[in-house]
Image (cartoon, rainbow, N blue to C red; front, side, top):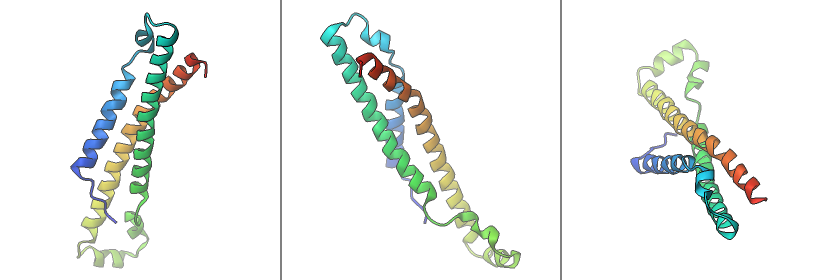
Length: 135
Protein backbone atom coordinates (compact mmCIF):
# COMPACT_ATOMS: atom_id res chain seq x y z
CA UNK A 1 0.00 0.00 0.00
CA UNK A 2 1.84 3.05 -1.24
CA UNK A 3 1.34 6.30 0.60
CA UNK A 4 1.48 9.57 -1.31
CA UNK A 5 3.63 11.91 0.72
CA UNK A 6 2.41 15.22 -0.66
CA UNK A 7 4.09 18.59 -0.47
CA UNK A 8 1.71 19.83 2.24
CA UNK A 9 2.73 16.97 4.53
CA UNK A 10 6.41 17.60 3.93
CA UNK A 11 5.84 21.31 4.44
CA UNK A 12 4.20 20.49 7.76
CA UNK A 13 7.24 18.46 8.78
CA UNK A 14 9.54 21.32 7.81
CA UNK A 15 7.41 23.74 9.82
CA UNK A 16 7.50 21.45 12.85
CA UNK A 17 11.25 20.89 12.49
CA UNK A 18 11.74 24.65 12.23
CA UNK A 19 9.76 25.17 15.41
CA UNK A 20 11.78 22.51 17.24
CA UNK A 21 15.03 24.04 16.01
CA UNK A 22 13.96 27.53 17.10
CA UNK A 23 13.10 26.22 20.55
CA UNK A 24 16.52 24.56 20.75
CA UNK A 25 18.16 27.97 20.27
CA UNK A 26 16.59 29.45 23.39
CA UNK A 27 19.06 29.69 26.23
CA UNK A 28 17.16 29.32 29.49
CA UNK A 29 19.54 31.50 31.48
CA UNK A 30 19.26 34.28 28.90
CA UNK A 31 15.49 33.96 28.86
CA UNK A 32 15.33 34.34 32.62
CA UNK A 33 18.01 37.05 32.94
CA UNK A 34 16.72 39.81 35.19
CA UNK A 35 13.41 38.07 35.89
CA UNK A 36 12.45 37.11 39.39
CA UNK A 37 9.43 36.01 41.32
CA UNK A 38 6.18 35.87 39.41
CA UNK A 39 7.74 37.02 36.13
CA UNK A 40 10.35 34.24 36.31
CA UNK A 41 7.66 31.67 37.04
CA UNK A 42 5.56 33.01 34.17
CA UNK A 43 8.48 32.77 31.71
CA UNK A 44 9.32 29.24 32.83
CA UNK A 45 5.70 28.13 32.51
CA UNK A 46 5.29 29.67 29.07
CA UNK A 47 8.50 28.11 27.80
CA UNK A 48 7.62 24.72 29.31
CA UNK A 49 4.19 24.86 27.68
CA UNK A 50 5.71 25.74 24.31
CA UNK A 51 8.24 22.92 24.57
CA UNK A 52 5.61 20.41 25.65
CA UNK A 53 3.30 21.47 22.81
CA UNK A 54 6.03 21.19 20.16
CA UNK A 55 7.23 17.85 21.53
CA UNK A 56 3.63 16.60 21.61
CA UNK A 57 3.18 17.55 17.95
CA UNK A 58 6.47 15.82 17.14
CA UNK A 59 5.33 12.72 19.03
CA UNK A 60 2.10 12.57 17.03
CA UNK A 61 3.93 13.01 13.73
CA UNK A 62 6.56 10.41 14.68
CA UNK A 63 3.78 7.92 15.45
CA UNK A 64 2.20 8.66 12.04
CA UNK A 65 5.52 8.11 10.32
CA UNK A 66 6.05 4.85 12.20
CA UNK A 67 2.68 3.60 10.99
CA UNK A 68 3.51 4.72 7.44
CA UNK A 69 6.83 2.87 7.53
CA UNK A 70 5.28 -0.37 8.76
CA UNK A 71 2.11 -0.20 6.62
CA UNK A 72 1.50 -2.71 3.90
CA UNK A 73 3.41 -5.78 2.91
CA UNK A 74 7.17 -6.04 3.09
CA UNK A 75 8.55 -5.11 -0.35
CA UNK A 76 11.39 -7.57 0.16
CA UNK A 77 9.06 -10.51 0.70
CA UNK A 78 9.87 -11.25 -2.94
CA UNK A 79 13.13 -12.72 -1.65
CA UNK A 80 11.11 -15.65 -0.29
CA UNK A 81 9.90 -16.49 -3.80
CA UNK A 82 11.69 -18.91 -6.07
CA UNK A 83 14.05 -17.44 -8.67
CA UNK A 84 11.66 -18.58 -11.42
CA UNK A 85 8.75 -16.74 -9.79
CA UNK A 86 10.88 -13.62 -9.38
CA UNK A 87 11.88 -13.82 -13.05
CA UNK A 88 8.22 -13.94 -14.10
CA UNK A 89 7.45 -10.96 -11.86
CA UNK A 90 10.28 -8.95 -13.38
CA UNK A 91 8.39 -8.81 -16.66
CA UNK A 92 5.61 -6.70 -15.14
CA UNK A 93 5.53 -3.56 -13.07
CA UNK A 94 6.36 -5.45 -9.84
CA UNK A 95 10.02 -4.49 -9.48
CA UNK A 96 9.35 -0.80 -10.03
CA UNK A 97 6.44 -0.80 -7.59
CA UNK A 98 8.45 -2.65 -4.93
CA UNK A 99 11.45 -0.34 -5.39
CA UNK A 100 9.15 2.70 -5.14
CA UNK A 101 7.71 1.39 -1.87
CA UNK A 102 11.22 0.91 -0.48
CA UNK A 103 12.08 4.48 -1.49
CA UNK A 104 8.91 5.78 0.21
CA UNK A 105 9.78 3.91 3.40
CA UNK A 106 13.34 5.23 3.29
CA UNK A 107 12.04 8.79 2.95
CA UNK A 108 9.67 8.33 5.90
CA UNK A 109 12.54 6.87 7.93
CA UNK A 110 14.67 9.94 7.22
CA UNK A 111 11.81 12.23 8.25
CA UNK A 112 11.31 10.20 11.42
CA UNK A 113 15.01 10.36 12.24
CA UNK A 114 15.11 14.15 11.78
CA UNK A 115 12.15 14.61 14.13
CA UNK A 116 13.60 12.21 16.70
CA UNK A 117 16.95 13.99 16.66
CA UNK A 118 15.27 17.37 17.16
CA UNK A 119 13.11 15.99 19.98
CA UNK A 120 16.14 14.38 21.61
CA UNK A 121 17.75 17.82 21.92
CA UNK A 122 14.68 19.36 23.54
CA UNK A 123 13.49 16.71 25.94
CA UNK A 124 16.31 17.31 28.47
CA UNK A 125 15.46 21.03 28.37
CA UNK A 126 11.90 20.29 29.41
CA UNK A 127 13.20 18.33 32.40
CA UNK A 128 15.55 21.20 33.27
CA UNK A 129 12.69 23.70 33.17
CA UNK A 130 10.55 21.49 35.40
CA UNK A 131 13.48 21.15 37.80
CA UNK A 132 13.84 24.93 37.95
CA UNK A 133 10.11 25.33 38.44
CA UNK A 134 10.39 23.02 41.42
CA UNK A 135 7.88 20.62 39.90
